[in-house]
Structures are given as structure tokens and as C-alpha cells.
Amino acid sequence: MDQVNFSKWHGIGNDYIIIAAQDLDFTMTPARARAICDRNFGIGADGILLWSGTESGRFRLDIFNPDGSVAEMCGNGIRMLASYLSKNGLAREETIAVETKAGIIASTVLVDGNVRVHMGQARLGGLHDNGYAGAGGGGETGRLMITAAGRELTTTFVDMGNPHCVIEVDDLENIDMQRLGPAIENHEIFPNRANVEFMQIMGPREVKMRVWERGVGETNACGTGACAVAVAAYRLRGAGSPTTVHLPGGDLLIEVEPGMDVYMTGSAEDIYTGAMSEDFVVKLKGL
Image 1 (tube, rainbow, N blue to C red):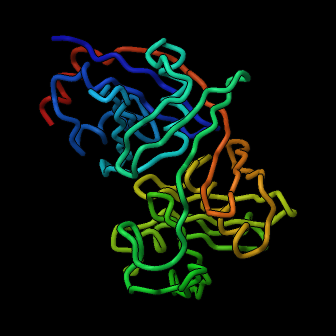
Image 2 (image 1 turned 90 degrees about the vertical axis):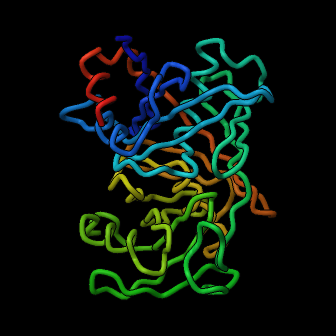
């Protein structure tokens, strides 16, 4: 029975397991993703990045959350994969193109080791594939009032290829994430659930945030969430660009262009490489 090789990476505290699809002789199912991500009985991570090459010369990335669900996009994951491919000599072009469920994402590993990613075009409001129910809800600003966990909240919906619900607050420390996070994530207005970000404006180019990731819970960082927060601050509060977004795990630099194209720059770090034991692989195949 063959072992399965993997690498463990993190992007400002958001940790993922990187696996080459060619190394698997089984399909990554929700049950198997849950077992691998389990922090007590598996490797432990905020998700799995399953990558493969394509005939076009691009790379393909499938993202699994620790609850077994599939994510359309992961900003931190894109940075990790780009660094991983570059470090291992697998990407020969300066610009690394990766196919995701949210489209093709291009990234560049900079000389300082950070990765700059073109995250695509942000959209606010309306009914999108990853949006909320109710066509036209929120209008061009994406503003929407919802009731969750007994509280009336003014939210901003931002589509970054995956759904984000951004809420501005005066004090991040007093947010009950364990109560509000799941209530908003699973609100009936979000047909595909939503990532939830609480943001506190610190200055004209500076924002702090906490994030409740869909299918994960509260995490140290979320790349698409940081982009959503910067977009909301840019459009609704006139924040400048680039904006430094402070997350519990570290900082990301987000650029928002007038046409709503978004760029993210941040770190990605290799933690360790390993191999799943034969016994663990047998267990996975039985799931």
C-alpha cells in the first residue's frame, strides 16, 4: 500500500495541506477531507489544496474545507500553491495561472518571497451565482439589513468568486463570533452559505478584521475575506488603495482599482512535508 505525500503550508496562520492529485488513487470525498483535516485524528488543517497540471499548461486547484464542503476560491490557498509550485520548480512561468471554480487566478512570486495575486473583479449586491437570495437586494452598494442571533445587522455583500458578508463594527474584541458567525453563515438569505467578516476602520488605508469562514469557523486569516473587507471600505467609506488589512494571523496588502479589480499581496510559508501512513491511507479508502 503506497503512502501519500503532502506538504503543510500556512498563509498568515491559515493552514492548508497541499496534495498533488496524481499522488492519490482514490477520490477526495467529503468524508476523506474531514478525516485528513481533523486536528486530533488526522493531519489537521483549515483545508486541503488538491492540485493538478492541465493540458493548457495551467494548474488546477480544488479546495476542500475541513467540513468536507468544496470552496470556489481561497486567496491564502492561491498564495501557498504559487509558492509551493515555484519552490519545487514546477512552475516555469513568472506568472502562475491557476484554474479554480471561481475562474483563472494569476499570481506572481515576488523577489521578497511574498505573492501578489490578481483576485479578479469584485461585485457588490445583486443576485450572483454565489450571492444572496432576492434579485436586486442591496442594490449597487450591496447593503442589506438582516436579523441573526437576535441582532439587527447592516451588512455588505461582496462576491469575490465566493460569497462574503461584511459587517462594520466599532470594536472587534466584543464580537461574539461563536454565536454570530454560524448564524450569519447559515442565514436563509444566503443559498450557498457565506463567509462572514467583521471590520473596524482604523484609518484611511488601514482596516482590522475578524473572519468566520464558511465550512471552517473562525480562522487566523482569509485572503478573499480581506479583499471583501477592503472593497467594502473602499466603496462605502472611501478608504484609499492600497489598504493594509490586519488579521489575527498577520497583514495583507489589498489594492482595489476603480474598475473593482482587486490585487492581494501577502506571505506563504512552508511548515513541513510528510507522508500519510499506509494505515491512515487504508482508513481513508474505507471512508
